[in-house]
Length: 293
Image (cartoon, rainbow, N blue to C red; front, side, top):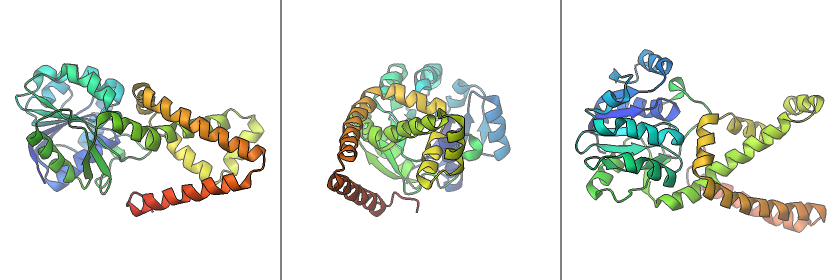
């Protein structure tokens, strides 16, 4: 396990505030500085005692940081990086928590000064809740945290990966483009489907809509949980990972058309074969320790 003398977290939503909690409890930094553009969020962070120092100005917040963690929506990465670039000290490492990697690299890298080290990363962890009060210390425990080294020095990558393991995460390295394809199918497309299904229910005539809500089954309730996730964050994800999402959406539409034909022509064997295969996927996810229950 590695640690840094001073860590600054920019953005105090679910991810940033959870990271702050585990950094303090596990002693991963000697000094923890927190900043967010929203004064109300900073006030909550101060009340919750999440950091050693709360700073309104992001540039001042990073001046002494050995590690800067960008826990802001992917659509804000470029602007925030440009804002803090001149304040980064020599040798500072800057990482992010965005769920797209190619776009984040393209947005952030041009603004990172030569004397700093940029190592993109992504914790595959979260809930539908947001804000500093939503964070919790065990969010990353036994969840994967992907690092995409982006040609950073090996010593800096190893140190960051050791630090991230201190959060309880399972840390792995991955190519950025491959990461975006994997997350498009495992995270981004499921959210898009959930938003669509819940949106369809909302657009039904009033009586039917009321009964959908009243008699909602567990499957629909699961979709509503996903569809209640932060709309700004997910808007940015779909805009920034559009190529990979559209590729997977095309595959999904083709498979959906296959099922539509099977239902229309009463081809029960095709339905059963697919449903049997998908049960095996669920078992493999459980065996990998990636189910909460």
